[in-house]
Image (tube, rainbow, N blue to C red; front, top):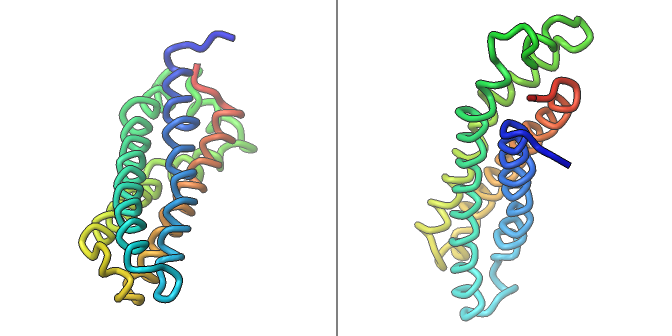
Length: 170
């Protein structure tokens, strides 16, 4: 199997960085969810919080790498003015036009919400540290933001996979 440079960057953007962001969610969700009084010892809170701080910052960094490579590396090839560009192909067919008008709009604009929310969660986890266990309202709000980041990125990933299947970047 041979991948062109463009296909390689598409794989890095979606299958490596995007998948890493989505997979990191599972660990972060488990860490945030289980950070409740009565479930962990004081020593466990310290150990778990350290792992949660590192994990959420790594997730945020991977999220930023995903949207940056998508926006400034892969997306220009998609939106090329050439008549055979993926964008032109999608817009030329009424059956695939909505893949661009909704799917790519989501990826272009809404997908940026995922790393923003992930960064807010990482900052908050770092700010509160081991005291987060005492602030259960904040922990629950962080869980909501974390799930929203995952959902936003997941939807963008699904659109990206389907769009690349219908109109691949060559």
